[in-house]
Structures are given as structure tokens and as C-alpha cells.
Image (tube, rainbow, N blue to C red; front, side, top):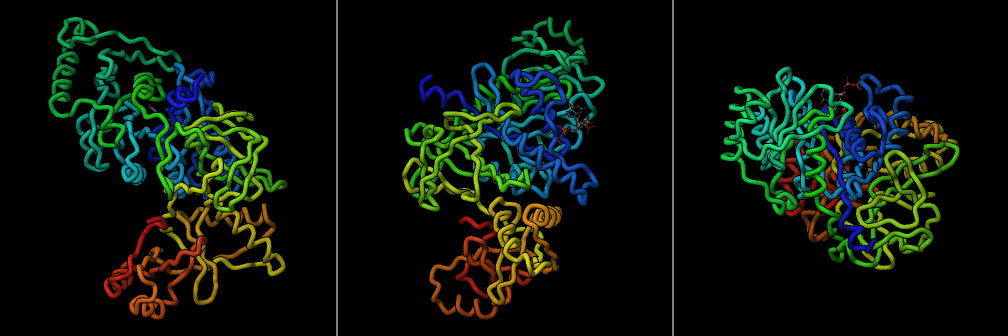
Length: 528
Ligand code: G4P
């Protein structure tokens, strides 16, 4: 197959949702359609079980699963689909944000009864910032939930999206009769036992036809006609270009558990979802169909086997082809590296591949060369942008608990930070190290992994920080900045890249500082 055709047939996306909305179930049904798995239950949930925060076996189990489900690839009607896994647990939100830099589109799953939840709001706002095309799937229609129009309203209000339904439910919960597919103009009736079967659809191109009454009964038929009329009146008609620009979001309804409405979603997805997109670097925009390979690291998984310091770096291919045993330039180190066993991912297996295309993800064995955000190219010196760090929510001093193991501790911290488990800040005043995380769970993960993988022991000490802000000032020699550095020296630190960070102890003091030093800009992400 020609290079350009390989690009055209790829769709790389992520499924995002609040935990429990049905992400794992939907993933599994998509894989079933692709014939990539044979039965339900094959995809393991990477969810952290409730109450498992101090259960290290659970953390290890979760890490193991998270390697297995990092990328799930399958073929459907000649299209190569790569699903990138995104942890739903809020303590791992940063991992999800980074994965979103490697997707070309997303599917947002919403629970029909719970509506838009907190985690959905956060993740969708990141996608909106990046203009990532989104399709919304409203799940669990076999249960009683909110009214469809009310939900569409909620999605628009809370998520700030502009929606257009491409399918519409006929009834709900006990009365759930099926789905009218606006996109294909047909009806799919819910028989309650469609779990395993791929359902048949009935063509209903004309809603006014009396056949509709025979199919779903007079009352339901009349309601459907009214509702579809309303849909057509209220919502804009679908426009692929607007969707791909991130300005319009199609909505589907269904029940992932019952395999209902999933085929409609998948068929529409493969025809509208974007092929691998161009990506901005620090020097220029790189197009996927350029001949030379470029790609970037968006995820690192380390030390699954504590006996080997083995890491797997996940690279998203942006342009050209990635080939086995060919030397590529690691642009941050300015040195060439070659990989004898790059892994590709198929459903839940990984295999060594000779060649991969834009949109694909390869896993490279790494002995410590990579960190998140690194760029590989055929030879051009460029760096991909767009993997920012967000201000952590929690901050603690990290102390060495075993003076004989300070080297091990330093190495462990260094590698865990490269993996993106947490962020490290070094105080300007006294060189003390502060770990910032999105969730409290990370501290336990770090402590456990330092001990089991690096033989180092640490303790933590609380530190009162409200937010970390990355500091920017045009002229470092201006008096205002000098004054700021002197007055606030207690609150200044460097991040791992050496950027200056202000650790504000309250929102009030942050506000006061901002007012006092107008020539300094305080950023809440590391990239600006
Ligand atoms: P997540 O990955 O988004 O966290 O959600 P997951 O797929 O694990 O689904 C969460 C729960 O919702 C599961 O039940 C799952 O079976 C159920 N579910 C998913 N889709 C549907 C649906 O269309 N209808 C109904 N009624 N339920 C659905 P659980 O009891 O938490 O887990 P399990 O013991 O069934 O695996």
C-alpha cells in the first residue's frame, strides 16, 4: 500500500470519561466489532478500585494493566484504529492530559443518568483548548436517565460544546425501544439480548411512513417524529469541516454494555474522524505525509520488572515512517539512537514491527535516554511543543530516610519525574526538594516505587503551597523583578527544566503578588 494511503486509513483517538461512565465497556465493544477480541471481559479496567489507595498490590496491578492497555489497535473495514488509553482516576489526570497530546480526536462518554461529571469537564476543557475533534456518546440508555434534550443542553452549557445529535433514543430505561440513526436514516431496535450479536438495522428513510408505527407503536412513533423535528429545528446540521476544527460535536446515544448504538458510532467515526493531523514544532508545522520520520514521547512506563531497569517509551509518529534498526536523532541529546525491537500494539498484544506510519504508536525499550516530550527525527533539529506541566495540587518536601542511599534516591526521583509521575521543584533558598502531584495517591506510589525499584527510602513533610506558577518576565534586569526575587526568595524554586517557579502559599498572596509586580507574568502551565 502507498504511504499516503497508509496515512489516510489511520485513526488515532482516546476515549475520555468520568470513572464508571463506561469507557472500558465501550472500548471492549469497539474491539469486538473489529474482531480484535472474541469475547466480552477481555479488556481489563485500569480503574483503581474504591478504597484501594493504600493497597500497593492494587497500584502494581493497575500499572500492569495500564501497560497492557496503553494502546489498543485494531482494523475495522480497512481502517487501522489506534485507541490510546486514558486513566479516568483524577490522581492520574496529568497522564491523561499528556496522552491527549498524542490523539487526533476523542470520544467523550457520558452516563445518561449522571450527566456531565467533574472529570469529564476537566478533560473536555483540555480538548477544547487544543481544538481536538470530539464525538459524544451518551451511554446506559437501558437505564432510566435524564431526558435527551436536557442532556444535550447540559453538554452545551457545562462543557461549552456546540452539539448536533446524529442518533436519537426511542424511549429510555424500561421503555427503551431503540435508536433512530439520523446519520444513516435508519432504525435499530433494542431486543434486550443484542449483547453478543451485531444487530440488524431497519431502513426508515421516511419518518412519516406508517411503517414506523408498525415498528415501534403509535405513541412512540409520534413522539419520535416530534423529537426529530425539534432536533432539526434546534441543532445545526452536521458539518464535517466544523467537527474536524473542533467547532461542532456530534452526539450518539446507546448502551455500551448491551452493544447498542456502538456500531452506529463506529461507522460514523471511521468516516468522519480525522486522519493523523499536522503538528506544530518549535521551528515549523510538520505534515504527516512528509517523507522524513518525526515523532515524540508522550508516555513512559518504567520498571515493570524491578530486576531490570527497563523502560518503555511510547512514541507517536507524526510524519514519515519509523523503521526498525534505523538511527534517529534524539534532538534534546543531539545524538543518534537506533532501536532493534520497536513494539507495535495490536488489541492487547505487543509485537516487534519493522515499519510504522503516522498516527501509529511504537513502544521503544529505553535505558534512561527519554523523558516525556522528547522528539525523535530523521536528522532535523526540531522539538514538538504541547506537553505542558500543570500546576500540581499537592506539595510536600521529600527527605532522604537512609543517608547511605542518597545516590539511589536521587536517581529514583530523577527517573520517576522523567516518567511524569510527579513534578520536582528545588527551592532557590536552600536547595530542598519539593514533590508536586495532582493527587495524594502519587506520594504513596513514589515512596513504594523508590523503595522497591531503587532501594531508597524517603519521608515527606507537609508544605503549604496553594499553586505553582511559572514566571515570565521580559527583562530579567528590571528593578521590579529584582525586588520580586529578593522579597519572595522563600517562595521561589526551579522546576526540572530549570524554569523559575513561584510557589504561592495562598490565592490571596498570589493575587497580591500579581498586583505588586505587574511586569511579571504568572503562568499556570509550564508552556506559554
Ligand atoms: P469506566 O471504564 O468508564 O470506568 O466504566 P466501565 O466500562 O468499567 O463501566 C462502569 C460500570 O457501568 C460497569 O458496571 C459496567 O458494566 C456498567 N455499564 C457500562 N455500560 C453500560 C450500559 O450501557 N448499561 C448499563 N446498565 N451499565 C453499563 P460495574 O458493576 O461497575 O462493573 P462490572 O462488575 O459490571 O464490570
